[in-house]
Each structure stands twice: as structure tokens, then as C-alpha cells.
Length: 339
Ligand SMILES: *[C@@H]1O[C@H](CO)[C@@H](O)[C@H](O)[C@H]1NC(C)=O
Ligand SMILES: *[C@@H]1O[C@H](CO)[C@@H](O)[C@H](O)[C@H]1NC(C)=O
Ligand SMILES: *[C@@H]1O[C@H](CO)[C@@H](O)[C@H](O)[C@H]1NC(C)=O
Ligand SMILES: *[C@@H]1O[C@H](CO)[C@@H](O)[C@H](O)[C@H]1NC(C)=O
Ligand SMILES: *[C@@H]1O[C@H](CO)[C@@H](O)[C@H](O)[C@H]1NC(C)=O
Ligand SMILES: *[C@@H]1O[C@H](CO)[C@@H](O)[C@H](O)[C@H]1NC(C)=O
Ligand SMILES: *[C@@H]1O[C@H](CO)[C@@H](O)[C@H](O)[C@H]1NC(C)=O
Ligand SMILES: *[C@@H]1O[C@H](CO)[C@@H](O)[C@H](O)[C@H]1NC(C)=O
Ligand SMILES: *[C@@H]1O[C@H](CO)[C@@H](O)[C@H](O)[C@H]1NC(C)=O
Image 1 (cartoon, rainbow, N blue to C red):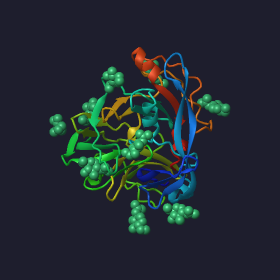
Image 2: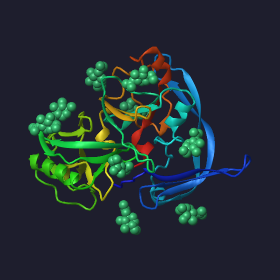
Image 3: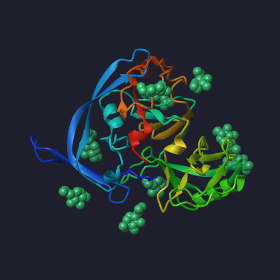
Image 4: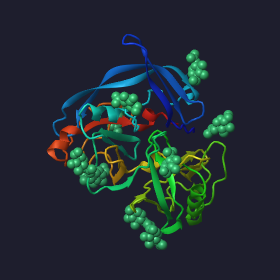
């Protein structure tokens, strides 16, 4: 089980020497020694509107065709490629917005069965919870501020800290003091016997579980800047071995960078709104909430990133919004290729 931090660290992509030559790009990621370089290519992204009309929409996007990959890309990360969803203007959501296809905002939904959805042009709903992004111009990321940690109904810390919401990271990583506040407080509420540390498992806090037992996990709530509560619906990771079952708090200790990864986004439609520079979240099972009624894709199918061919989603959005939301269905595990 390996964690890849595919957060863009630096990029250069304006090296077009002449109108007839290839344009070079190079990207470096937060994971050690992980980079890609090559040439820029243009292609068409086929999307459909996320409404009852399921109208086809084609959008020109630019992406990097990698020629030289290093680091975790050589160890199996992202075999199907990466989609740029960042704040910079070359990202897919920024490009679609610049082409007039809708608000510069998109949403991702993380279902419980490793299937999810991404909707471009989706700026959420007025009843979602929100917190502002704090962006460093030199390193633009979806950086938010957590003001309080509440475990099992107890406020365990008032220490403010920042974390990046990153869908390209599978498990949440926090540095101290937040890591210790959460894990020790979580541990103090758990009644199951502690599972000994195991070099195969990256998590520190693990517990035995009998076959039909439901883990006695405490609630994990984060208070975001502005006061809205972010309830972590699925803080644990279950394991089954020949010897039996155990589960772990799905949190890794980091030195420095704090990342809210995919596992802490489960159960939500997370809105990354570039126009308003806010993160939004609302409970969702990805398919049959008011925004969408698409059936989940069969998870044994192989396309990592595909236009959902069967979207019949009636939308509660205004007619204007309807035409502006485009859906892709993805299989998160193979899409982000993090194992
Ligand atoms: C990156 O590599 C350096 C030198 O090899 C090492 O000291 C450091 O711990 C590594 N960092 C991470 C996050 O793996
Ligand atoms: C590939 O990229 C790495 C990292 O930037 C660089 O050190 C290496 O020289 C490059 N290799 C080739 C063949 O260009
Ligand atoms: C993107 O941003 C860069 C740097 O700010 C700028 O040079 C470039 O023209 C922008 N590209 C587009 C397509 O807006
Ligand atoms: C979404 O964008 C539309 C139009 O750009 C705006 O009217 C609406 O208030 C926005 N909704 C949210 C929740 O930001
Ligand atoms: C996140 O924002 C805080 C507060 O502005 C800043 O100190 C920190 O460097 C930012 N982190 C990243 C990774 O951008
Ligand atoms: C956690 O957050 C949820 C959602 O905001 C809220 O309903 C619940 O009361 C909170 N739980 C605790 C123990 O604070
Ligand atoms: C925990 O902190 C929140 C937000 O600061 C506050 O509203 C709440 O009353 C506190 N709860 C307890 C049990 O102290
Ligand atoms: C949505 O689906 C879930 C699980 O499939 C089901 O329990 C729930 O009742 C459905 N909700 C609606 C509004 O259809
Ligand atoms: C998924 O597709 C496979 C192969 O087409 C099929 O055998 C399986 O029953 C399907 N599973 C579900 C849940 O539909």
C-alpha cells in the first residue's frame, strides 16, 4: 500500500519556440523525485450535460504527452494518466470555464464503492457548507484552514492549521500536533484491542475486529474556517487477512504537508469553486441526490475516465445551470491509481 502525493509543485509550459515547433512542458510533484516532461498536445474532451437531455458537448483541452517520467510514475502511479484539476489556468476546469462552458467550478463525489463522479461547471447548492481557500500565489493549491478538531463529541484542539484538499492523494496525511490530537483521542474512544504495528500497513492506529462486529469508532468532526463542520463519514480503513479482520484509523503521519485525501472526502459532493475561491461540501451518494440520478457504473468495467453514456439525470438546478454542468463518471481507484 503506497501513498503518492501527486500535487503539482512546479510547472513550466510556455516553451513554444515557434508556431511550428512542439511546445515543451515539465511538471514536478510533491512526491519525491516525481516529475513528468514532454510535449503539449490538444485534444477533444467529450462530455455530456448533467440534465435530462444528456446533450453531447465537446471541449478542446490541452494536456501533456509524457516523454520522460520519474519517481512514483515508474512505480505504477497513474497508469492511465492524470487529469489536471488544479487552480492554475491550464487545468481542465479553468480551460472549460475560459471557453465559456460554465462557472469556473467543479465538483467531485466520492461514493462508498470506489465509484465517483466529476461535474465540471458545478458550483454546488446554496445549502452546502463552505470554507474559503487560502492560496499562496507561488504554490496554488486547494488550501483550507481547520480551526478545531472534535473527536467523539469532545473538542480536542483549538490549534488552527492548514490542509490541502487533494483528490490525488488516497489517504489523509497530517503533521503534528494535529496528527497526535486526532489519533490519540480516537484511540482513547475505541474499545477494540489494538492491532500490533505491521510493516505492511502504513497506519499507526489499528484494531482487531471479529467477523460480524461493527467498529466502535468515535465521530471525527473538523471545524473549518468560517465555522462550518466537516464530518468525516468514513475515517477508518478495513482489512481482512487470513488471520481475521482488523481496521485502522485512515490517517498517516506527515512531516510538514497536511493533506485531506480521498478517504476523508467519502460521502460528499465536494465543490472546488475557483470563481468564489471556496470549498463546498454536501452529503451525497453521488447518484440519486437531488442533483443527479445516474446509475453507478459497473465497477468491473475498465475505462478509468469515461463519459457516462447513460446519464438521465434530472437536475434541480436552474435551467441556465443545467446546460452548464457536464458529467464524467470515473472509477476512482484506477483513475487515481493509488494502491
Ligand atoms: C525525499 O528524499 C530525501 C532524500 O532522498 C529524503 O531525505 C526525504 O525524507 C524524502 N522525502 C519524502 C517525503 O519521501
Ligand atoms: C528526465 O527527467 C529527469 C528529472 O527532471 C532528468 O533528471 C532526466 O535527465 C530526464 N531524462 C531525459 C532522458 O531527458
Ligand atoms: C496562464 O497564466 C500564465 C501565467 O500567469 C499566463 O502567462 C498565460 O497567458 C495564461 N494562459 C491563459 C491561456 O490564460
Ligand atoms: C453558481 O453560479 C451561478 C451563476 O454563475 C450563480 O447564480 C449561483 O448563485 C452560484 N451558486 C453558488 C452556490 O455559488
Ligand atoms: C496554506 O495557507 C497558509 C495560510 O495562508 C500558508 O501559511 C500555507 O503556506 C499554505 N500552504 C500551502 C501548501 O499553500
Ligand atoms: C459533527 O458534525 C455533524 C455535521 O455537521 C453534526 O451533525 C454533528 O452533531 C457533529 N458531531 C459532533 C459530535 O460534534
Ligand atoms: C466545541 O467547539 C465548538 C466550536 O468552537 C463550540 O461551538 C462547541 O460548543 C464546543 N463544544 C464543546 C463540547 O466544548
Ligand atoms: C438513494 O440510494 C440509497 C442507496 O442506494 C437509498 O438508500 C436511498 O433511499 C436513495 N435515496 C433516494 C432519494 O432515492
Ligand atoms: C458487472 O459486470 C460484470 C461483467 O459484465 C458482471 O458479471 C457483473 O455481474 C456486473 N456487476 C454488477 C454489480 O452489475
